[in-house]
Image 1: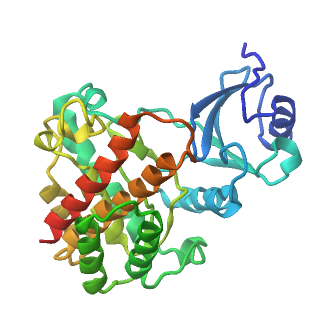
Image 2 (image 1 turned 180 degrees about the vertical axis):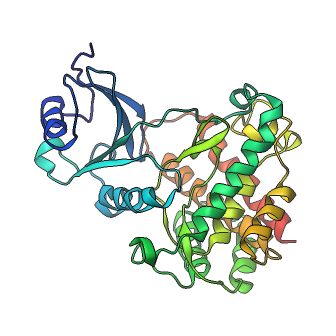
Length: 343
């Protein structure tokens, strides 16, 4: 039988009482364990006395902006997408009463499966099954982008127009505010992106972080898309460009530096095959997909620059030189990748 446990970020008695009132069939005591944490939203596994498993999501601990960690927004997204057949964890309940756990949280069913975040993990997938899984990943993205946001009640999730222009403006400003030195590649990419913004054709639900690390896989298929906190409405090709950048080949992964590339093991479809599948099943023009790939690299470079500066100023606490070097090198590496793609 599960035992009641005390875990940071969970007021066990209050949350258990909330479960008993709002989650049908729950059998206390509940066991809570942190699955993922950090400065992003915290994710807990909740198991009751009958071994029924749930997942609870709440904002990070401490003072946070509610707009940046909006539990109601995430809950509304998975609630709306559940009936469409898009693989999401079934939404169970949302708590907005901060007297329960000091912050909003929501609960969803636990989905069985594996999250593949590295080539070492992906190597456990039989080689003969990797191609089918890779094609299911792109098929699932196509299905998400086919959803009419208005038809499922998500039409007000975000502004539909000028998605890329707003991204370029936002990250130009963010980078300028966190600069510590001149990086010509960052400046050059910013100018090229601003001067050649593609025409947006329609607006879809854009996940914002669609990659293997945010997919629960079961029986060689995507069982659930995870982490919807960056989801908005906008240009679907931004999702596709982002996915392609994480779809590393073996010769693109630097041994000892980066082991977050499941696709670096043999057997997965190539980037070109993903592009062909997406084009055939959406009818979208992908002739400017390199723009979106460059935008994704450049955006991550701007984020890395911001983290680097915060570490440099001591805002993130004590740090080692190797951490500073990592983020600084990421800015250079990603901005050069973006520039190479645009050229």
